[in-house]
Image (cartoon, rainbow, N blue to C red; front, side, top):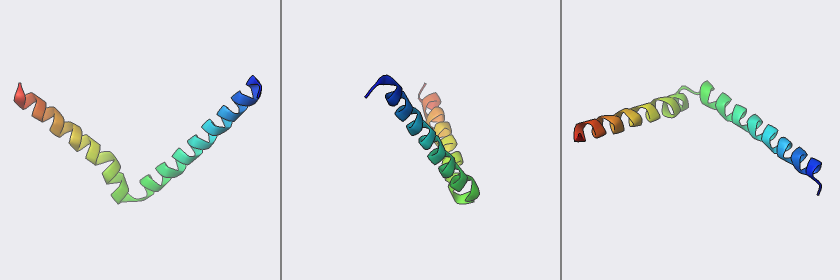
Length: 57
């Protein structure tokens, strides 16, 4: 396999992975329950972790 074929394969994989990511994001945005779990839960976890660290100071 030469370098141009290898780079073509990497580009194809990257393009397909971006397509899959777009499909997953479409499903998450279209479903409010998934949207809350994927957006609100990490923010709440970050806030709780930050507060617990500040309390321990």
